[in-house]
Length: 223
Image (cartoon, rainbow, N blue to C red; front, top):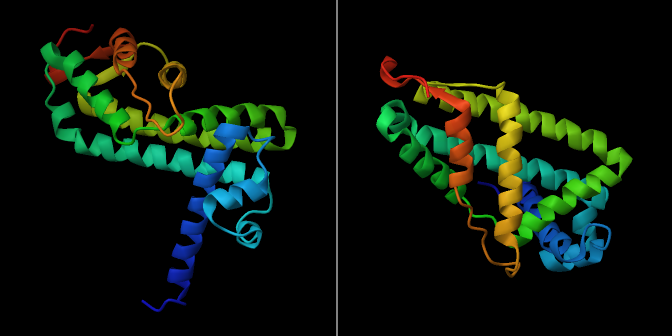
């Protein structure tokens, strides 16, 4: 491929933006967003201020790009995990539902182990967007997109395993996301920023077992 072709330039630009996002996460985790300077982010990324401003209009623009990139990557991973587990979920029997869900959720968490820095930065970004009025509307927009796509993916998984929810699915997702958020913070506590966060799948599975009804193979009693 021609190194100056549009596709190559576009790929290079995406890589530069991704590198700056990762650098931003590392700096946000240490300094917070208010304390993070563009100079520090550029230094962490190995780029100049010119490279930063050719990709982002401001630090707030980088914050929004970070939300978009991480949301997209997380949902893409969940999509891949569901597809990888499609046959196993579809063949599930009532007797092994809980064991299967535990393994499935653990595999979902293991698709990419978050670092402590990523966990802290994610919470910093959420708090920052709550404090900054002009970012809050966009933050809510991105959250709505995340919930819509997440609802679609989870509904696909529920259809495969033959389950229905005892409460509205959006409410169940809020519960699951809260468990994930708090579990991440607890698992990150006392660790170095570069260490990975090991999440326990059991709290998530316990909620699913309590709030789902399973009808595997058409002959299982509802739980």
